[in-house]
Length: 601
View 1: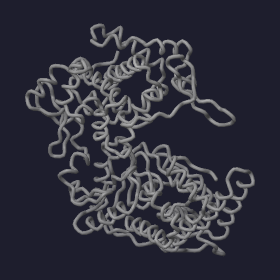
View 2 (view 1 turned 90 degrees about the vertical axis):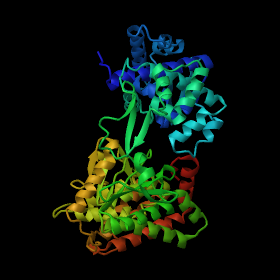
View 3 (view 1 turned 180 degrees about the vertical axis):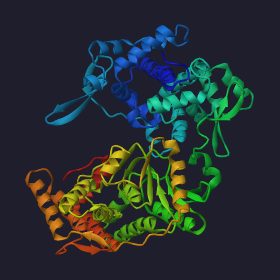
View 4 (view 1 turned 135 degrees about the vertical axis):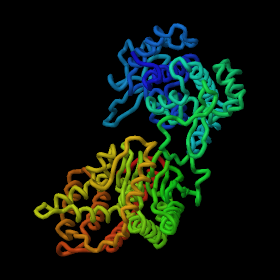
């Protein structure tokens, strides 16, 4: 039997309640599966965590089993009726439509004329129909709002069907969660933590309630018939305005028995930018913020859309290094966004290429390369702490760091090939350099070249930080992995201090990179043409592959030679800019920008 205060016990009670209350709301209002998932993703924090998608992954039978168990074992629960299984769910269980484990649940996928087609279940008829895209006016207004806190305020104030949905389901959840203290947990932060960890929520119920404003939300909850527990009234009556607050860079929670705020246990050593940004920011622009994180270390964070890298980020990186070299021991590059960085701002590249402003584009790429080289060759240690997606330019920053402190869940890769380009921010150069360093006497050199070539040519992305080592994005013996994202910045800071205190010496630019020349170039050409002959790649893929092979091999050299980083960066930049002049590359970039889809033309 699960013990009180454990994440599993709390998650079962609160998580299943949230799903069951939503199912009953859907049953009453006639909302579709697609509508619910469209609405729940943005407030949970990630579209893939949407309710019915998550239920399909976990298994409908699991949810039903837990709901029945709660109904039997919590006879005095004020919301016991909501644990009754809706008729359409019973029908799905009877048909063995349990989700991923039976290949169909609220959704299913079928092959039609060789293509995968997605179908969604009509909850009224229990028939599958082609999945339909849905739109809500209020959601459209929040597309550019990255902050979940700000997004919640807009969505809960909406007067359309979406606003009605949010207020009905979450006000009920807020009241239910408050009534479960001290029944399932003595501290409110444990309920939020359980929902974050077990259900993939970015913010738990009390965190969301805080974002909306505790006292003002109570009035709306009462009007909707969802009165919270008495301790919430007592808290507000005593002058406490929120469940959480920040003091001296620490996050405190409201402790109900003592009617005071206490530091969340176990977080004493965390460094969270959201806690210290307001008081410790020393410089910022529209896309970055530089924060003093103590002990002579600065942190640079990105806050552009998807943390993409454009001119403002390049400016921020250079400014951070200048400040650190002047008065500090080192620099950490990290952020608390949903992703570390989705790569370069391809929209900016696309506009320059369409206008055929290739001189300007060449200057922009050179500025990016120079910035990456400055990350590598600054006089202070630069540690990068990526999490989630670190793609394209985000990966290239990591490749040039003195050390990478990576969160275990890391999707890292040089993915430029998918938009008709090769890595242009030093990524291709860096793979040539690493190939040179890893070759040992007696190695079959072309085999090693082939592996590096295919990693970029197939746009391979790691599914974890550990796989990033296997793909060559992270370096064994240098880079490390951290399991808790909350500890990521603190760990990165300590490694940065360690590098500084051990007598960090500014590196010297490399002029001893061994490239293989024509023998490797020929391998790249033959491989690309063979793939084209077998109809595995397109004619344009062949052209990109040849450009990639040219840079990785060091160009049309008659024999293996030693070259400099600057030489390779010049080849890389020329290849990148020349590909931007290709119509088919522009078509690929446009496809990503307009529909988010990779085009193979």
